[in-house]
Image 1: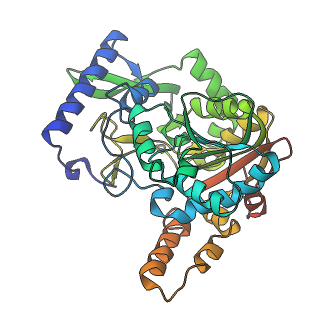
Image 2: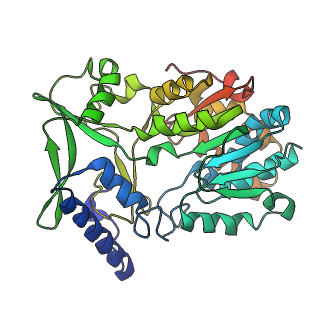
Length: 391
């Protein structure tokens, strides 16, 4: 965790972008009577056209960006995902749909591995709403052999009656969250107000009817063991909404979600009194969403119990829920490593270091989870055979 005073200083262009984003947010707050839900604040700073973090042009992924995802760490990750969905593609003759493809690295690795396995889909659909990221993905995937790149097709919305495999890596954690405070006077919603032109937290003493209904749905599980002191947490209504929409569009096949988070009992644990909200800028993590609006990522951990309930409620069958480490091991990541000659130190040693980052409990292995669902008799053997976690 990096203290705000130790964060990197901004150059003139970056500072100007932050100032434009702040002005947009200030206008939104004033238009809404001086108070803005954090969910709306987060939506704007991440997705506002031309200003939001995912809508503007700054580099986000990899060593030169703000954070590193598993596909950026190693092609072993994408190869394991490909292994896990190859059976479904061969069984159904379906396609691949990747949600939020990021830099395009995962798509490139999956296509390459499926080609090697003789399981290429007719189409590899990439659902991307950011014009900037779509352009970056197209540039990267254009470097693939022509017979792979020609299978790539970009979408702006979910298809209907989809058959095949849906893959989503680190998509759910960037969906806007509602902040709920539980104190001696009950539940209230935390939002954003202004003191002059400065953003400040402002708690409403009650919840709106829609937020109250959402909290009531999970209230027994969430707050049963939480003392009514000063407890701050998040609810992400767009997570079950997206999972439901994807499950509804899946006619036959599987969907695999990979992200960091917990089951509900762990997420809303009595000791997790400040929630999971986190910001990322140039590989520095901190907890101040007001610091660099428009330049920094804002995330929250995923409630995988909510993911499971949404998918099952939409008619999908749970295949499995496990850690990223268990999933990769069950998918044969060590076999992939064994396919490289240990005597080729220049190639082999970096791969072993990459594998360590992917599976180590101190890195991504335990915090990141993999949850999968199926429709129409499909499955993911690597996920079903891995050691399961309770939901």
